[in-house]
Image 1 (cartoon, protein in one colour):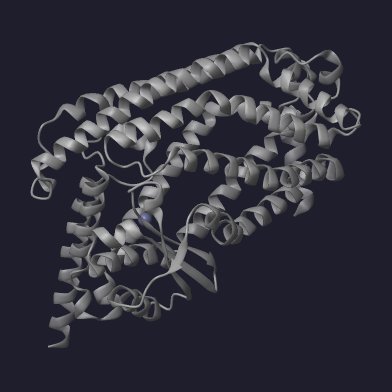
Image 2 (image 1 turned 90 degrees about the vertical axis):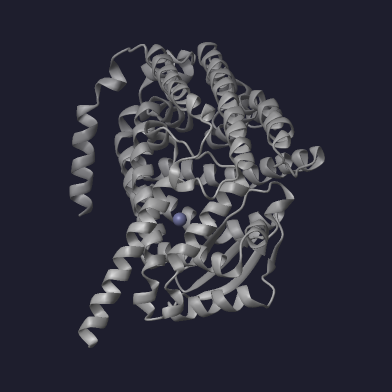
Amino acid sequence: MMGYLNMGLDALQTRLAWVATDSIDWKFYLQVCSWSVCLFESYLLLRQFPLYSKTEPPPVLAEHFKPETFKKSQAYGKDKAKFSLVSGLYKQVIDSLFLHYGLMAWSWRIGGKIIAKLGYGPEYEILQSIAFAFTLFFVSSLPSLPLSFYQNFVLEEKHGFNKMTPSLFVTDLLKGWGIGFAIGAPFLAMFLYIFKWAGNRFVPWLMAFLLIFQLSMVILYPTVIQPLFNKLSPLSEGELRSRIEALATRLEFPLKHLYEIDGSKRSSHSNAYFFGLPWSKHIVIFDTLIKQSKPEEVEAVLAHELGHWFFAHPTKLLLLSQIHIFTILALFPAFLNAPPLLRAFDFPPSVAAKPPTIVAFLLYQMLLTPLEAIVGILMNAVSRKFEYEADRFACELQTRLKDERMEDMGDRLGRALVTLHVENLSTVWVDWLYSAYHHSHPTLTERLRALDGYKSAAAKAKDVAEKKEL
Ligand SMILES: [Zn+2]
């Protein structure tokens, strides 16, 4: 097995050997690619833009939207689209300038200076890599800070969603950087150590490491990281709690804890999700969702979430991401020892002659940008399929659990989705191409239409079953 894997990987590397020898204008290629992606995204926004001028909601939604709310949602959508267009172009100009003036090569030099101050020489590649990565991250994230400030305190504020204060904004940012360093530095050290240790047989080892990392984040994120930003408290006793517990028990969902999260501290957007290990799961519901919807509607949202669990959607997505990671790693060796690649990005010959792994990896990642855009579209398609499956699961609960009280689950889910949309002022008119590229969920109109289909199918199945009993 390992033998075949290595043979295949070697063959692949032979095919890509030209990367290490030919001098190619990689920088030009990258400029063209990133501008193409940016212009394509702008084009999508321009396709979407006229839809914000429609004065009526789609017919299926007409009865749910008050004219006033619809007007508000259109205005919010239009403002967001304008902001996306401007900020997308702004970020692209900055990135393009960084690329042109060799930010990466500069950061590597600064990284070297930082560790020299601490008394370490360039032979400490892992240490310099960490200093480099944080310099690069810090410098390249500075230009977008004013954008996210504007987004929170002007755009979201204007439409009544911002609950954040400037001081919370700053502490969140610092906390985020702190955590990024606390997790990122050891992660990067281990990542680079595996390359050094395993040589050109790094693929299976690195995959194992990344999988372990992903799984530990599943545990660490909600238990350690999220509580730094939000307060999770046990959902109080009452109708909602007993409904969800009963549903979990009947579906044999291993519910350990049921939390309410104070999502409203930062924003009034709302949702629910579950997480945890296969034998011990936690459900988290946003306080805003609880406030906006009736208990039986929140129950339907949870029925949808449990559908994701029932069909093992998170595991399937994890599997897909492993295939994705494997492909990326399998092609990487060709770029690992390619001096011309580094020279194309302004690295001095002394560094390019023996490329630092982290630099080669980041450059390689950048070259993959157009491919990643396509992978993103495919992943969205898969995710949308899963959303439909989970909706269908909720509608079919009455047959699955043989419970008449679940007959209207589809209606309840529909009502909850409409409420979520109305309260979040989500866009209801969506261009198909824009949606295919950006959305991991079907649009509200698509979901309501599908729900109607599942409901009538479930009703038919019930009729047939009753006739059989007679
Ligand atoms: Zn879902």
